[in-house]
Length: 376
Image 1 (cartoon, helix red, strand yellow):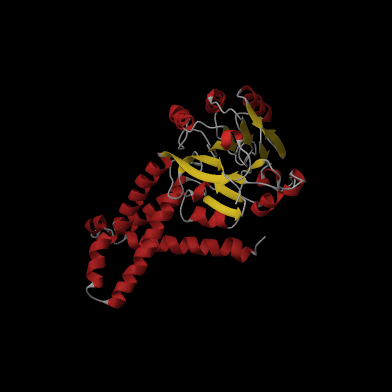
Image 2 (image 1 turned 45 degrees about the vertical axis):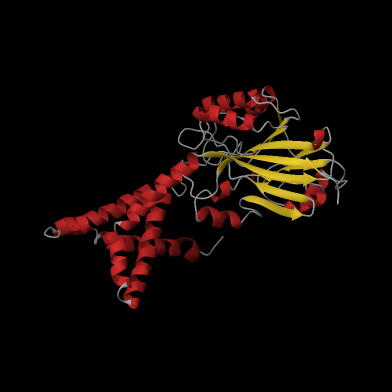
């Protein structure tokens, strides 16, 4: 626990300072010039606007605080540039006054972020990786498709209306293995969405199996009780032919699949990597599924050849997401060589959390092709 001065006092001072900065900038907006003969309106309307923005940002995890955050950031940066141009003098000052548009530029940039972030969130792409291994593979080749962090519900990037698109992209990869690396559902997923996506999972084919590991949202009730419980999830997955792995290793031909309990969901109470594979590395190609990208080196030492994770959403909202994820996880997004024989891949998520906005990372399914090669 932080000292109350740092936990309560300083944040309030910071909020008040930013509110004062916004109020001062709003007084300079061109439309207010028309109200200068009426001081009550001239000084009162900007105050109402600051109050409205505060109301929009009341939810610390909502879309409103994201957009107000971008608006405030643009004003802060713009004010700093304006001060710099005063020092530099002409022609820098004149050029900046044109670009600043008397304080309208931050609003235009925020609107652009909203439009671009929505398009980025809704664009579902297939990210492909190619790896090699000297270990035996069925037919000398293995195709793995990873679905992660769907968070399906109305208002996010993934809802049941997009199931045909998701099905087409997964089937186009012709997966040998289909894996779901957590947060496939969350506490806001309604029963209709839950049933529709479980039906999709049952329709998809993967000769070497379909496997699911829990994330921190699938069953953990962060903000409200979900529309389903653990029994319903286990039943639906079994009917769909999807195997739930919790600190379990299974063999499917020459390939081993290890599924870990989520670190946050269990509060860190889970098996160690060495306990899961006490024999260490062997001749089986080992696919390691862990919702959160943690403990990568220990997983590699235990025998993992490929680690697939999600959780981070690639940051989703820049820069807050990147800063937050860097503080907790060993990889924010993409591919990382953990050791000479182990690679980790972190998905940006097949959906988005909370809202249809993404300014960092990709909305994606991950398709990994592993080819057998001669050992050098």
